[in-house]
Length: 199
Figure 1 (cartoon, rainbow, N blue to C red):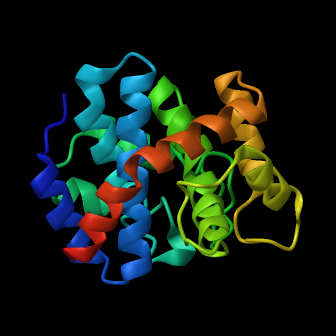
Figure 2: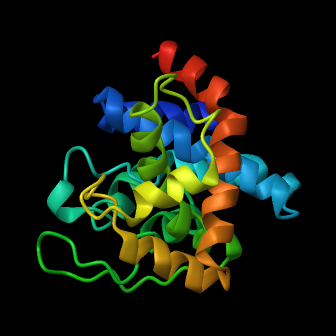
């Protein structure tokens, strides 16, 4: 389904992203997207879901004020197909970027809705994990995550409004999204840590 291999996608990501935090986020979202693909009955498309997750913030490091606006240009230059470009841009749907433009590309496929919903939440979950003695998601319980989620001052950069909108687009209760994304991160944590260590 993808017209770019995972290796090519990772090279492309590295071309425009050097910050270890951004690379870790990309690898996290990739792993979480692959987990969701298998969980939701799209196992055959898991690599494609992962590549979309890996590339979703490709323009953020260099063009934070034009996030999701510069991505199509960077991806097209590398020969990436329009289906991946649509999916990448759609995770900014309805969000006004720095130059005052609102992204109008709507998430359509279930994969795009999952990306929209889980992207911000992975950041919040990881921030919560770093506050724990083990600095891990593995021993984190849902009630602990919900407490952090409700605390407006905690990980304030992770928009609760976007996360809620993502759950609504999927037709899920917020708790289902939180439960599944936390499970995904627990399942993928070792893989993500290994990938980050290899950077």
